[in-house]
Length: 246
Image (cartoon, helix red, strand yellow):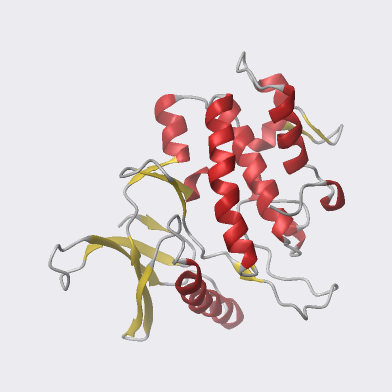
């Protein structure tokens, strides 16, 4: 077992049908959610993830979907296994990121997000645990599209969607069920702040003053004014004032 969450379990497996017997990832849908409505919603999200992965897995930095099937009334997804460390593991093992590493991360991730958003999809769960540095080529790979959402062109402005994502990295509008593509940019910005400081994003924001205080937590880690402005633009609380398009 690689991981376990509210929607099910993720296993590391071997593809016996391919001559090289490569490793792959199997996601088993096993909802812990209580109540019929919650289970139905979770089932719908799981099915949607398969569709999105098939669409988005053509990008070299998004895992490819190999198969989707049902056995004994349980749904499964089989996808490419990305060997490498997550950015959270990298942070834990090697310490804070420097300015150059953050710049490289932004360039890499923004191009992936541009592709994702061009297909009218919002990831909704960007955080250090969902970005893997692939061992083979050191490229960053964006994983776990389980929380992703397809943006409907006809969606009414007042419709509130499901609140989903990780609280520490979640944009204000997303935490109210109104995620936009700019919500992903916010989460990416917060991810950068965490990697620069190794502190919980909750501790980098002053709730009383309603402002980010990440510069006070750098502990001697240098960030230029130029990069600082970019990061401030990504984590702006107000959507209208935030970078909202890649």
